[in-house]
Length: 409
Image 1 (cartoon, rainbow, N blue to C red):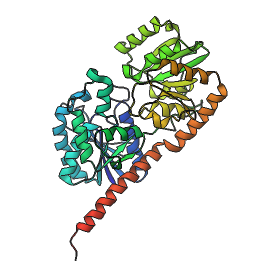
Image 2 (tube, rainbow, N blue to C red):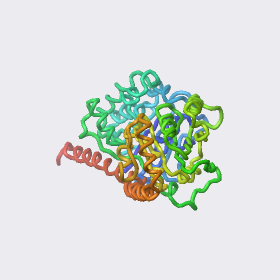
Image 3 (cartoon, rainbow, N blue to C red):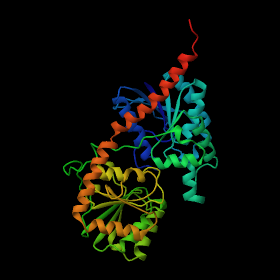
Image 4 (cartoon, one colour):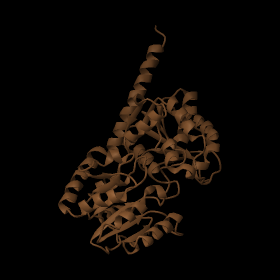
């Protein structure tokens, strides 16, 4: 198949760790590479955010990145991109005419809107992966949500127009149903993890950047420094966990962010500042060693559309304690690969963590099960194959429909 992946703000060529460069960039890059390994032809369409970028870039993984002109050829925060999406859709239409793909797979709601316009004009099947739903973001962030006001309405419209929605978690199927999108229209294919990079082997991806231990036990939390990640819940749980330190990896490399200062103040107020270290942004090359340095990885967000950190931890042979929300309801199997706890409940979190820290044999058992699960279900080759199977169903139905509607004789 010839496949067009559309990712308006999240380029697979972007340096991971920037303001709007994270899980979606990795997902699109790894999916594209996996589809190429299966023998498909793949082009990724993303907005030109640098005037020096070539229109088309061939990657080492075998897929092409096409830069679509829309708005200034400079970085623009993703929540400010909506006014440029009509131009993006127009240019995308012309570019897809050139490639003539068998289908379009849009990533994120603005890509979906632009792709729906292009796909309708060119009579192409449309698949959509939202990565995050505006209705969920607004529910949990309220006035702090900076998304355009019409985001939810647009998401409903493009979900209705799509031939297939490829959700990353079963919880998203429920959320879509609340918006009136039937589950029969949704296939669940999770995000994946790079099993060559994230591994329990201590001889790979070693790093001198891993801080030395200051306590008997180490907890690690990883992610952007934003309130919804719930790091303050882990800090509060730490008051019930003696001989335990907490490392929080994430945020910028330079000026401390507001959340950094708030978390430091929380730790000081609760009397655990000497056991909490905010170590800033960690390079991807150093992350496996940092994960392996922990006894447990703790993921405590209020909500999480998918959450890649639990997979990375399990791939490194480290058990996970996670909030029972979003994609982590799928990835972490309670009492099998780790523990699920209610969100925003430091007492329940401390109890689950404490029980696991007290039993090295239990942690080893959970680690083995987590590693087996992630290797069997969450490799990018498995994700690409499952995604391609969803594509094939749609393309096959369209081909059959075209054959039936063709004149006889």
